Amino acid sequence: MVQQPRQDEPVYSCVIPVDSMTGYTDEEVIVFGTSIEDAKHQAEQLLINQYGCNSHQITQLMQVATIELLASWCSPDRSDEREL
Image 1 (cartoon, rainbow, N blue to C red):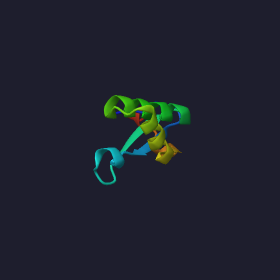
Image 2 (cartoon, one colour):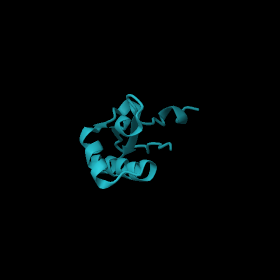
Image 3 (tube, rainbow, N blue to C red):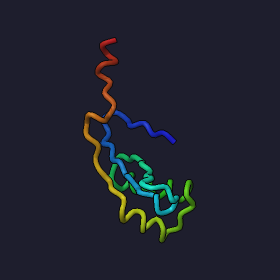
């Protein structure tokens, strides 16, 4: 699944280590949201839909997840499109 950020909206990343579920060393999934709560919600939905996690598993995984605001340079910049 690919998510594309929208212009002029903050973008938060949520990185969830899932190696304890998959057995693959250092495996992580990354989801994005426009707020901390949205990133958490996107992560929870992914864990339910793709990994079949129950609420206890989700709680455990979210305790070790990291959520960060991505720097503005990571967001799409449309200024160069106007020059074309």
